[in-house]
Figure (cartoon, rainbow, N blue to C red):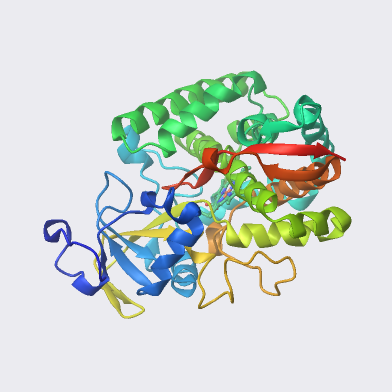
Length: 409
Ligand code: HEM
C-alpha cells in the first residue's frame, strides 16, 4: 500500500507487495480524535491486507478490512480454523484450548449446545431486575455531584458486577479481575500477558474445584457439573469454558458503553431525541453496536488456498478487526453517521456464523437498560474536558477515560 515503508524481511514470499501494510491494529489510538475514523482510512485500500505486525510485538498476519471479506471469513470454517486461534496454548504452555471459541465444528457444535440455553433471551430476562438495580445504585453514587468519570464510575463496574454474579465470582474482587484481563489482552509486553493469563487460569482452576465439591446456582458450577455424551466434563474442558467466558464477558460491554456514551455526549440532538423517545433506545443501541465493534478476532488458514483472489498459505494468521468492518463505506452508506433509523444495522460486532457471540442478548440488555436510566436521570450530558478523553486500540478497543458533566433531570 502506498505511503508505507516496507520491512521486506518480515513479509513472506507469497504476500504481494501491493497488499502490505507496515503497521498494526494498535496504532489508531489518538489519531483524528476518533480511532474509528482513523481506522476507516484502511477502506481506501484493498479489502484484504497483510499487516506486518498483526498486533504489536507479534508476527505478520492477513487482515480482513472489508465488511464482506470479514463476514465470509467469519463463516468459512472450512478455510479458516478457530483451533488454537486465541493463542491460549502458546501463552500458557498448556494442552487445553478455550471452549468453544478455539474449536471448529463438529466439536464446537457440541460445546456450544451446552452453553446456548444458559444465555438465551429468556435467561437474560431473569437478570433484568438485577441490571436495573445495579445501574440505579451506581448512578446514585455520582448523581448529586453532577459529574463523573464515566468509565471507572459506571461503565467498568455495571457489566462486570452482572457478569460476576452470573459466573458466581466475588464482586469485591472486580478490580483484581479487570487488572488480570488488562494484562492479558491490553498489553504489548508478552511476559505481562503470560502473567495475566496465568493469574486468571490459577484462580479459575481453584474455583472450579471448589464448585465441584460445593455447587451453587451459577455458571461455573453448571460448567463444573456438565456431562457430554454420558461422561463428565474433563478438567481441560472446564477451564477452557471458564477462561473463554472470563475473557469474552468481563470487559466487552464496558468498551461499547464507553464509545456509545462518548458519541451521545458529543451529539446533543441525538441525546435529546432518545430522552424524549425512549422507545428508540433499542434501535440506537443496535446502531451503536454496528458502529462500535470492539474486538479483533483471529483465525488460522487451514490449507493453502485462494480467498477472494488472494493466495494464502496453510498456517497464516488472519485477523478479523470488527471495529474496522462496521465503518466500511462500501457496505454502510455514510458509515460514521450513527442513526437509529438506519435500515441495515446488522454489523459484525458480535461476529457471524457458528461462533456468533453467545453473550449478545445479555450485552444488548445491559446497554439498553443503562442508557435508558442515564438519559432519564440527566437532562444534559457533556464531555467536561475533551483533552482528557483516552482511547485504546489493539486486540480490544475501548475508552479508558471519559470525564462527564451532568445536569440532573
Ligand atoms: C458488547 C459486548 C460483546 C461483544 C462486542 C462480543 C464480541 C464477540 C465476538 C465478535 C465473538 C465471536 C468470536 C469468534 O468468532 O471468534 C464472541 C464470542 C463469544 N462471546 Fe462475546 N461479546 C460481547 C459480550 C459477551 C458477553 C457478555 C459474554 C459472556 C456472558 C460473551 C461471551 C462470549 C463467548 C463465550 C464467545 C464464544 C462463542 C463461541 O465460540 O461459540 N460475550 N463475542
